[in-house]
Image 1 (cartoon, rainbow, N blue to C red):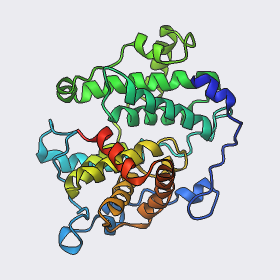
Image 2: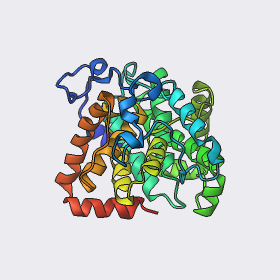
Image 3: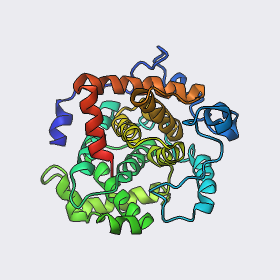
Image 4: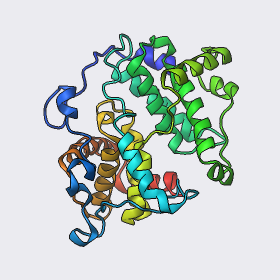
Length: 319
């Protein structure tokens, strides 16, 4: 049970674990993590096809993404540039700085619970729902102190909002894949038995939406991954492993300080190097993401042999 898991965990301070560069400061760890866009001078991360191997990502990102299949492809590049410009605005950094009770470890437990719910709930949810729910949680925690006893309720509320938002954003895909938004009773039932009521869920839903100003169309790492994977013509195994890296890293507070676009590019780069022994050109911000994601990957391989890990990723994320 989620509450029991929290009660068993020791208290932690809000300092992050040691970063890949050996420093413990969050501000040092996160500096320049947004400089991956061609518009900000880091063009070596998006080199042209003529100047780099075929797996590199060019400046122009007009792709046929499965998530955006219903959109007019004429505007996909403009969509990408718009998402890049909004990335910093909707990506919370150090969201737990003003939380007196909630630590990075407690957040990790919540995200792990959300991940299990998204992967096991029937009728199922779109994979993007998890990333939007975690984004909502982090943005709310960044501006609103919350008691530990309300943490699971916040996660459930964020999932409730994200599931409805995905259904409104991608109705055609949801109907084709038999995806349905959760009702309030279902969401309350997912929490610890008797912990919360439907009225509490609805009340917190209004509070979250008001706090976030109803800004729910936000760029997440999985959306950038869809663009990068489709344009770079990666094989399904590489894309599935990259997605699994992103899903697992959502639990890590330090890794989530990186910009979503940097994480997406780093996950694909690391997955491609493991599956096909190929590497794309990157910039320092993406290199820092790769170093952090390597720790996640090594933990995965320690728990599951590489062939089994790749097969699990393919079966879970390939459609």
